[in-house]
Image (cartoon, rainbow, N blue to C red; front, side, top):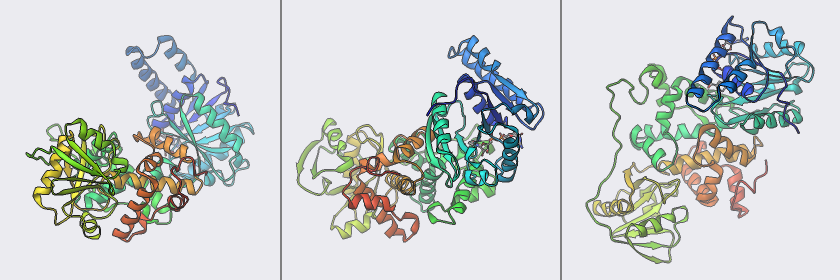
Length: 510
Ligand code: NAI
């Protein structure tokens, strides 16, 4: 299937933040682009804005003056919708309202050629509903860009029930030709990213609500151990709590109140208070000039840890052994079930049980649990928690050992799955359910989360590295601890584990 010819006329409707960005992307790819907005003068204003943006790129030496002029020359503001009649592809980015968008599509259907592609940039409306009642619902499709469209690589190509498969293929190839990373998705609530990303926010909000640690500490763990660009609190402060909370509510309602997507009272309270984040000067953090960045909780030990015993294979934590060795710790290895012994302390990767519960059930004295890290060789921080009967001296020995390996050690309360592990398995769980339900392929979901929200690793590949069995165990334990369907493991993970599969990405076909 071929991309649209780069000479094909493109029309963008809505000259707001998204429409302007999309028009720029199409014009940069060589298309003549007509931009229409029902606010008089808005399209011309938006094109002037694009010109200024491109001017900045010229100043930085990232774009030639001639290229800037050529791009702007391809952008044409139009003041009447009738001027879009010759478009081969129309992308609407108007107000997020089903009725208004349906009216617009009906108008376009009467105006444009029968084979014109009618694409919507909607982030939350069903493509199936948008197309319903039209004469040619097969020509309607989602083309979901991320903000800012010229910079963000991901485009979700969203097919409704009636969308022609060939249309999805053409648009996929077209997005690629525009320098984007497209993925195919079925029109289901939140498509890929806005669905699979929900646990990223939800788990931090819950951890905060349950007193695991403060915002700055939880954010630091997701960044420094998890490798995410931002923690959930700084990110939602940036997005705006009104926007982020509204997306969560819309996905929750669209899934008939499935507790997986339950909104957080902590975030609702911020919205109620008008603490919307950066844009209002305060969210979880304060943004006034004199606001101090809250400190991240850290433990320090004065003890020197010269030796430890590694019992068995540490699974995803195994790279820690080399890191300890490189930092001068003498290591004795012996058979066992994946434990580190230092002094009187026993260290283990969390399996989703409370430390106090696991200490009793497994008969482990002075148990200290470790959280997940993206890369145990290079992480700069790690979270730990411990069981109620862990002696202060043993805890100190555990901290000393991790410190010796160059890790900052941050304590969190004894909650199931700590911080990064719990967040990542919940992301993978949602991704697995999306695969199971045929929303998208495993590879496309991982790509979408990396290109759309900058995750350091696709959640499904990450779950493979943790081990499908271990990921499933963590989810089972979370569900048992809370007794809530929110933590129910995806049937896909359970099935793959039962089949002995090592990968989700290759084993699971959508
Ligand atoms: P915006 O409010 O910045 O721009 C919307 C523009 O559409 C305005 O200029 C308005 O005058 C125009 N408009 C409204 N009704 C119109 C009509 N009937 N005919 C012609 N023009 C009309 O909105 P934004 O943020 O650009 O969003 C547009 C669409 O993109 C929405 O569907 C939104 O859900 C979606 N989206 C937004 C993202 C974001 O981060 N802002 C990200 C991805 C998708």
